[in-house]
Structure formats: structure tokens, C-alpha cells
Length: 299
Image 1: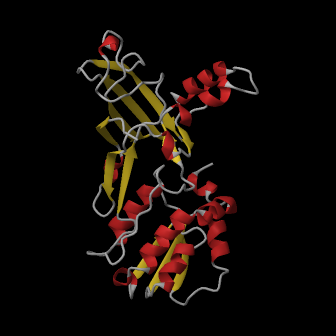
Image 2 (image 1 turned 180 degrees about the vertical axis):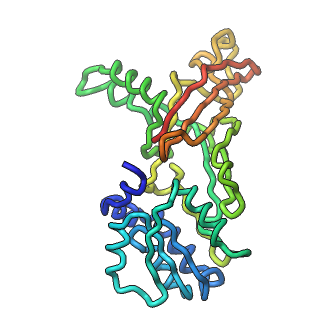
Image 3 (image 1 turned 45 degrees about the horizontal axis):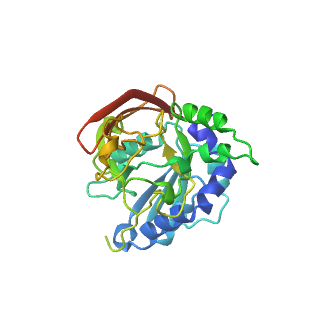
């Protein structure tokens, strides 16, 4: 099923509209920034039910053009009692979601015009075993089934898991992986490689921020989990001397930092990305331990 086929389902639209974090951020950005919306011509690309288009009309836009690739959703949305400033259209020549936004920006956004959202940032953080299935399988009504958990972790080391991570399971501070300026970025910049270092943590008028962080209320997007092939122990640098002969990243000699080099590129399959992750753990004495490169595909 393509992205546009998936968004022909009313279920996904109910999920998005029920996502309070998402809706609060969008409504605040649209309704509480009159200098951007009052009298403006607005295009809502991939409008779905048209809820954001209705917000734009409510905010005082002189004209709202709501564009949708799904004939089913566009047909339903035109049955509302629409403001006179709104018009619905169907555009089938849409690519990926972000690709379509950049295409529309380059073709129709006037000089000095605004795009919402205007920036997007990807963060990375390390998580502990509490975010894996290991604890569950270690005690199943008194029986140890940890062999199943280990199998699942091995699978997760190849295929990213999209799920909600509890902030109490984060064991490092969050680090910026990549920031996109949607007003200026080029389509080719969607693919990138970035190097980051994870360190253990110790326990306009109205800008709007839509966060999918584990430290904020959960959204329907959840988080994308990349699992190491084996756990890497981390601890502060003041480590007892008796563990210094052990491998870095083990419980006997925990790592002080973890260095990651992550590449994200669009895959041949529509709406799919390939991710590679190179991992190096660094001990408090500077010793390093490298792991084989891991490859993931996220569809």
C-alpha cells in the first residue's frame, strides 16, 4: 500500500486528529500567528480531512487551497460546509511527503512566504534494556523465557522498531542528529550522514514546537528504535581500577561515551529509508571498541 493509499483510511485520520500534541502544535502555529495568516493565500498540501485548512480559514486567510492525492478523502472533505475562501483540489503527481512539500514550495511559494513547519530536527538518545522486550521474557508467570527475548533483540538489530519509549528508560542525553530548514533545503539533502557522541546522563508572535521526544507527551508518530546487536554498558568516568583489563562497554568496564556515525538515505522502495549505524564505545581511559556496521531498513 502506498502512502496515499494508507491515508485513504479514515482510521489514520482519526489517529492523527486524536493526537493532542500534534493538533495543539498545529492549531497554535496557525491560529496564534496572525501576521503570517491574515489575508494570506494558503496551500495545505496533503490536507486529508481538511482540518488544518479549516484552521487557516478561521485564522483569516484570504484563500485556502486544500490539495489531496486521495480522491476518496477529497470527495469527503468537500461535503463539509466550507468557508467561501476554501477550495479543494486533487493532485496525483505527489511524491513522498517531504518531497511533495519541497516541490510545492519551489513552484508556488512566493518570495518571503512562510512554510509550516519551517524546521525539523532529528534527535538521537540511548535507551536501556527497559525499552526492550528482555525484562518481559525473563519472568513469564515464574518461567524464564529469556531466549525468546534475545531472539527478538537480534531481529530488532536489523529492523527498526517504531514504538513509544518511556523517558525513564533513556540512559543518555539527547543529541541533535540533523536539522532541516524546510524553507531553504534542497531535495537531495534528505539523505545525510552525521556523527554524534552519546554521554550517560545522571539522574514569531507565538512559536509552536511539535515534539515527538520521549520526554514529552506521546504522539501517534512514537519513536524509531535502533537496537545494538548487544547491550553496551555505560557509566560515569570515575570507574574502579579493577575493571580496566576488560573490554570497553561491558559491565566490568563500562563505556564513558558512545560514538555513532549514522547515515540515512532514501531506499528504492517508495516511502522507505535505509539506515547504517557505526558504533564505537570509548572507555574513561580513552580505549575504544568498535562494532560491525549495522544496516536497517525502515518502511
